[in-house]
Image 1 (spheres, rainbow, N blue to C red):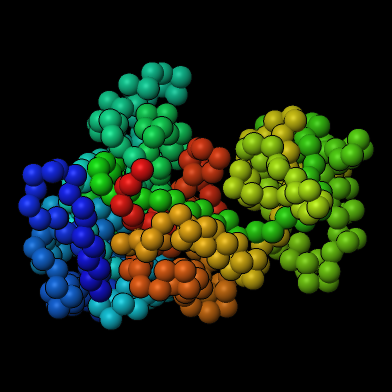
Image 2: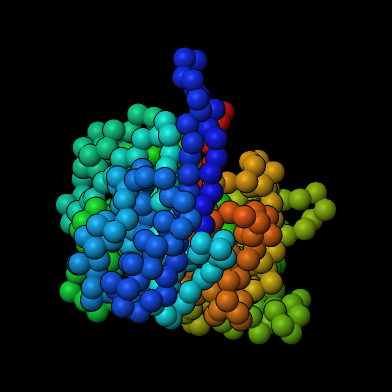
Length: 424
């Protein structure tokens, strides 16, 4: 599929405006050479005009054993100045007819070629075994990444599943590049003896990405897919990630006792969801309670897994560091809630910007058909707001996106990046 946009000149003496272009292709050929030939033919038919500035490629783990010869073959067949991508647990792509699909449990390769005038794209590859000191200077992290932060407003970030200290890598890049909105995910696992990340000619582990500067940017949308249940609690007692005591309206009790009280007011369907789809919303800033007393939630809430319960003490272990005074609220996850939340967030994105040139989707392996009961649950939701946008990406082992002004690693999330003109 080809998408072309005219970009107004920023230089008064330029005679004709530059043209931006997005061209996409999607192949399900099981043999690597046949898939690459298919992709090249599709891109040619779609009208790709010369080498692109950035080529994004996402492939299924079915090609893992061929990854080390994949990029040289792809670059020989398809022209792009920079190449970046990963092997995923599934592939999101758009074919030349404009059909966007989520392809799980089958061979698939998605290619997106982007021509972005007046835009700088600076790639980096990072060794996570040699991180700078977390208490060190910002400059030490910039030197480690090797990319000048000046003017950088967007970052695409991909991590290998074997990457050590994933949260430290994300926090360190946030420290070094605070102005850059970061979108991405953790690549898929496979049994081959090499990494899952693709950059240039190479297959690597650690982390890869690109910093984007200039006239195009990635707008992030993070859809966590949960609804709140019960009241907003305040943490009275916690040790690291273990929640020991909660309070509400001046009364304190254990987390398990608080949850038992909430259960009394739930429907039978919601009680069933509690058995396998219960999470905790951890506020990064205080909840803003609606005036009508409705349950509070919002973009400042991180949805986190509950990873253990101690029936003796009524305490709960959470996949997040906790602190006394922080606000929390229990959450449930189901398909309908996920659809509604994502539509609300994408509708807000549409109200802020016109049709994007492209959309990148990094979706949890727990979404897709497992959540929605059928294919294309997330991409179909996007097409309701943006009918013609080309979509590409991967199913991930963890998704990266901003919440409350900081970048976080998420689970069960759809982390979107919409490529739009970088206007004020």
